[in-house]
Length: 436
Ligand SMILES: [Zn+2]
Image 1: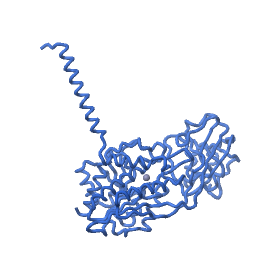
Image 2: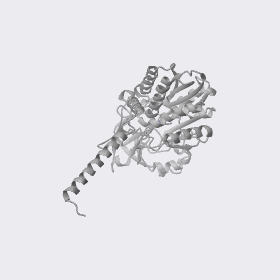
Image 3: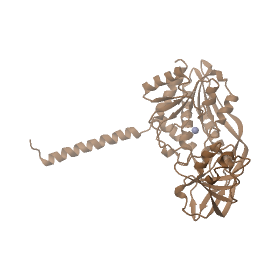
Image 4: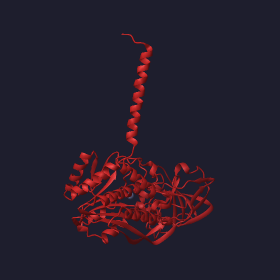
């Protein structure tokens, strides 16, 4: 059989156009976000907004986030909304943080991070003394805060072989504490991860972890500034909202998320903490809105913790000063990192509470959500609750770009894929735990 060339081309074109149309329709279906996703996305944007300053300790960022959360809960019409105040020490960086190596200005957060325990420092045109730490191999095992390494005198030192030296220390984490006063440049490579410190370096060391790629081959002088400020007692708050059950008000399902993040490293460098943990906070806020409208038989408590990044301090405080008897908590679910559940979620403590995990996986299977099992871990705010006997899971999402504790963890990097499925699953899980 022979076909006219024109007919062949025409039918090929029609086929091609309909293929394009169906791909576009699929794409539109895939990208059109659900109502849950839209609400979560909007709250993540608010929690990561410039006024929140990374929800840390510079410019009262965490306090602003707490105010936002409390207002949201009040608008939803929860039966009670209150805060729980407590305090802890923290090292903060409200001043300038900058580093110029030779003629090259390094970019904070991208080219370098300062150690979170760093002491303040200011120096211009300082001569850099290069020190090979392996030359101190014999002093390293016995070095301590009281007898720091006997390094040659200098205001700014560049440390060679810091990683190898750490292995020789009695405690590999103690390198900042066994250095004498002064500023240090420690070359590093790969992902940089910042943190919060409730301590300062023992002898007043100021440490810059600098990417190899940002370190000129030969550098003799540096301008270095770290505007650190030690706060002996920062006042922080847990924000709590409660919905009173219509039939069994003394039985509680509890949803928790930490809203604090790392804040700022200097005047211009914000750690937005979109994934960690604006995402979990927004998801728990969605749950609060849902239950406030649904009016369940049982009570539901929502706790938004501060101080998580400083060492689970908010949740520890809460379990020591519970506002609801811990034995009345039938189940607690903590969400921390919930920005992309395209690979499902992992449940920490799954092995600790097998009947509850069986219920969760049964519901998850029918909802098409993958739930992986993990054992006990002290890696988020569920920990002190399960230690105190409260059945508690910590769910984190599996997926996404993997930005963590860095300046790149911004809202635009979160797909929020599958997060709506997770929050809807948790609504059903709460009901199932309460025998519905
Ligand atoms: Zn977190």
